[in-house]
Image 1 (cartoon, helix red, strand yellow):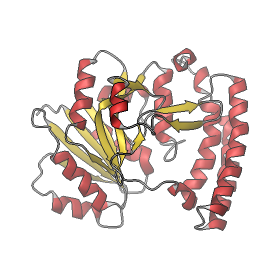
Image 2 (cartoon, helix red, strand yellow; image 1 turned 60 degrees about the horizontal axis):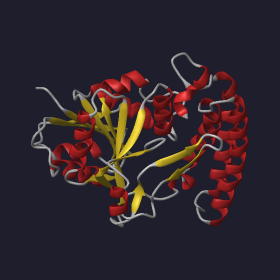
Image 3 (cartoon, one colour; image 1 turned 90 degrees about the vertical axis):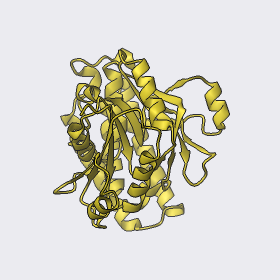
Length: 320
């Protein structure tokens, strides 16, 4: 069977949100295409695999892959993409819910521009407040490594008035592309970025080799997330500290930018500490230790990596 579209979903201990997402896929307007759903479970301890298999026992196009060990987001997403059969892949976190026509709008946009190297994303609304825009583009400042979500104060009619697609420096949570393009970009970096900044790194690499990233305004979904959750999670905080130092070197388009970005990393770490004291107070000692350990690891690894601007096949003029 020829598969037009593969939904690739990574999950860990969120079986109810995962079921909700699969339900929304099944309720989507996909009757004109052949599609498959691939779930990669990263060693959940809540019975996700058996729960999903039982809940969707009659769904013939669902494949559930269970990792033998916890390999985090990058490894799980790579397994899902490599296991897929679709010409196009729609990569999703498990905490989103699709709008009825959202997936088809993205697929149709890609088909209308099939000869271009592009990756697309929907407009994302807050699940708890379906009129509030969470993501409709991202401005990523490589001098500071700080990203800013765009157009979040606008309503949906104002977003539509901006055009059929919006430029974005990177995408998070949900994106669609040709399957072959994932291989062309080099998949997700499981070694340096198993989690935290793994999506941003993938899209920075894609831009360095000439890909364009767009938010398709007619496509929407809903994101059910917890703001600032990484600050209450020591292992995520450690990876954030380490990876932010690494991206200051990897992503930079010049030596001056690299040095400046590293300086801003230190400022951000102080901001994280302030936020721990004022807002995110869970596990304070473990969190402070994680920031310190992650920073040390990042500094030690800096000399072992080469910036993308200096690698063969990467062109920094694509970043302008």
